[in-house]
Image (tube, rainbow, N blue to C red; front, top):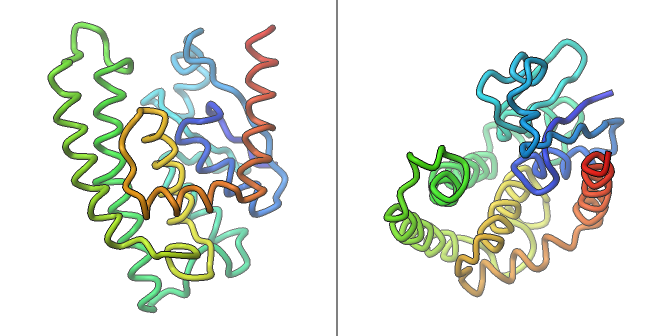
Length: 212
């Protein structure tokens, strides 16, 4: 049984979504940041940064969403979700993964840090327009790369699609402007049944935990 620690619509969504796509046995443990669950001794023993997602798979404890997705896809994917190593498709996949995390996501995380994540005395409102500029610049590049139809690599749904889609959902929640082709990509990919199902599942668990 794989255990995922996180909240429904954070980076943990990347992991819960792939777990649902993989159809493996897993459970969700809601981390209530408002109550300081991420600062508990038990959670900090799993991830000293106090961040999520975190998975436990047997004796393995793994953090960092991209690393978790690759591990899950390699171990449980049966040849799906990752292109064959050493191919052009694999190279393009890794390019997308790096771009999403280093360019698109970092701008959004800058916004998040200076809106709510950092201690108040460390937040700079002047960072927000800078981060928006960075996101818009990265989104323009992604817009030029994303295909008109299908997934990032054609017909194969991959880890890169999980990363990009969740990041664009994050951007939408932050009221960022999504270019039209990128928006069309988001609209078609976020209808995947596994994503719809896992949001219902994790949000129900979170709601029940918060009611206790």
